[in-house]
Structure formats: structure tokens, C-alpha cells
Image (tube, rainbow, N blue to C red; front, side, top):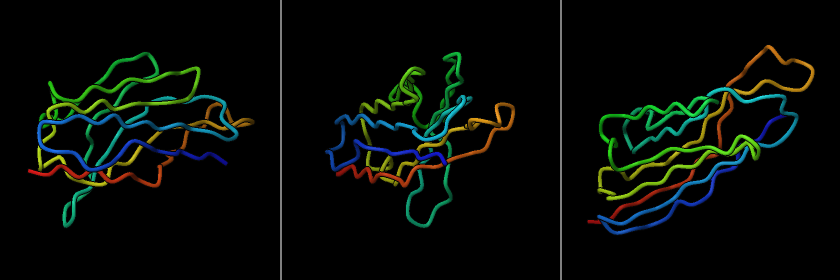
Length: 122
């Protein structure tokens, strides 16, 4: 089994910063893409940022220039540095990873973290 555990959410004022972390553990052979999604109340889950195993990143237009995604392949971890936060960034943030397990190196499945709440006050 594979587990993703997020940390770093919280309450911050508009203009502030937060750093989210997500660590994958379990019977991991390799991890391909990793990313962060968010879901606000009454809205669909949306991609915030994603990063390949080689470090290529892409971002939602709404966070470009404010958020930075990074990863540590040795630690099976992905991070999201969020600066200049806005009230509209308020949501539950979920970590996602495409993981192949030991014994099945060519088969990748999507795994999700439990989510961490980010609340930005105006």
C-alpha cells in the first residue's frame, strides 16, 4: 500500500505565505508525476500545480507567479510554496502522486492524500 500525508495548512491573512508538504510512503518502486489540487466549498476539485519526476512544472493560471511547486525525489516528497495568498485561495488542498509499487514497476496508479485546509482571511 501507498500513503500520502500532507502537512502545512492553516489560517493566514491575505498577502501571507504558507508552505505545504506531502510525503509518500509504503511499497513504492517509483513515482512519476506529483501535484497539488484544491477544492473549495461548492466547487469542483481543480489542479493547482504539477511537477514531473524530472522537475518540469506547470501551474493553474490563477496561481502563476505566486505559487511554486518542488519535489525531493530521494524523500518521495512534494512541496507547494504559496505566497501572496488571496481569500479565493481558501480550499482543501490535496496531494496527488502517480506511483508504481514494488513488484509492479511498470504499472502506475493515482494516490491521494487526506487533504489539508488552507484558509485565507481578508
